[in-house]
Image (tube, rainbow, N blue to C red):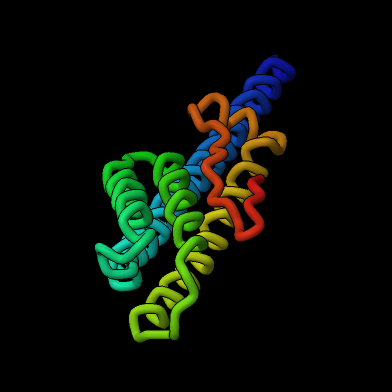
Length: 169
């Protein structure tokens, strides 16, 4: 009788401990997903700000070679505005970056300085976002967090924003 009571108490203690661990890990993963979403909104705002500044940098319409660049940047900006997922926004942003690299060299203007500031903001927010994703993805692969993540429906998120070198995680 005493052994059965001890077994029941031990099983109960293990169940409470397991539930406590499950709850703590799940709460941490929820917090991390919310932080990732919040940081993504900062990346998105920085991308939108840069997109708004682009029109101030383009050569005037009607100038030789400017029409095609205008058209392509307008399409890329529209794709950025229409994008609903981080991956689609990242792809549209990459297209805008490639087109901006084609801009002919001009003297620095206030708009170009603001664009440079916007590029720097994107880099800062992108780095923070990627670091949050990296931490989250690492945690859901560690034992016993991987079991909790699987049971609670958390999965790997590979929506990394490419760095200037174009590499992705």
